[in-house]
Length: 202
Image (cartoon, rainbow, N blue to C red):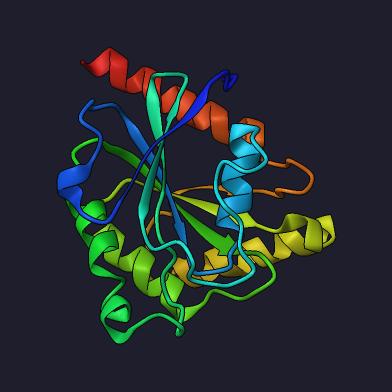
């Protein structure tokens, strides 16, 4: 898939304000500071489509970007950052939970995991929570450029082994680097094949 157009549509804090035009949605989420904004920019081929901040927990809204006039890329708030209010920390955040459970157009929720770290408890909790609610998931292992190739593969395997203590079968997974644009083609191919599958079933 080639991304020819990427248009900012809305930044919302309430599901009643979701885009009026229903289209397939592919959402991205992860623990704060996992590299979500950098990955979204890399994926879309835009330097500043998603705003990057050195301050964790900055994104507190649901941001929709219309891609090729055919689907929405959805930038969700990060979870698990102690610097936000207790109300926002409750669960995974009301806006996150409402969107993930209630958005009728959500085709896939990409959960980002930092390859430099072992599986974090908050990530495990979120992945298990989403799985229990039947949310279609895929895993994105970020910051591969920070590790040697072998170390990145070994880290992914450790994370997946930890997940397999709770899952019989793991979601699709992708190793990425926003700096080196690693994984971009694979992710876009996955999204494209999902879109084709949806159109065939309509």
